[in-house]
Length: 113
Length: 110
Image (cartoon, rainbow over all chains, first blue to last red; front, side):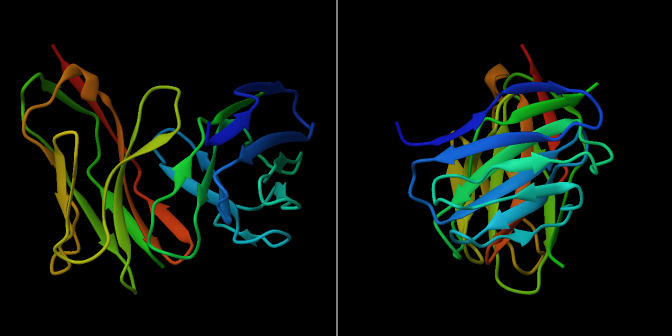
């Protein structure tokens, strides 16, 4: 099956711990994205990557880090520096710098206790 | 920068009612416009899109027309069903970035 797999679906962590959310795709898409969703605020862009070994900060990158060592994978680390990490995180892909749509994974819900 | 403003919710309707969700945008270039739908606990699914002025996107009975003169992309459906209950997001894409509106929660009652 072609698609985007995010894991884990639910994650609980204690305050001060770093956590890494996985995003894997087999769509052969060049671009990958991480969005954060909070109630009533829509989606906000954290990081995006246009090609392997390259990524750019989005609108709310502080407290997050990413890597893009393989085309298929774009993991997001939520560090202890992120002040309010509890949220729903969505990974997305796109074919490139065009006007086409983004394709989304099913999301990972992170709760910091 | 680019931005999207959409009608605030929540919106509650009866089955077979007419639905409109307003969306306006600000962009410096010539973006593509999208409507995405999100069902509870899930990611976003593309509902419809339009890539240039006067294009009409349509899917599952929903329609939206790209109006450059009014910078709008309003979503409409003539007769909603309970299964249309979801959160709807208007979005625009210019180059790599996709910018979203805040989302409108729609609840359809039987």
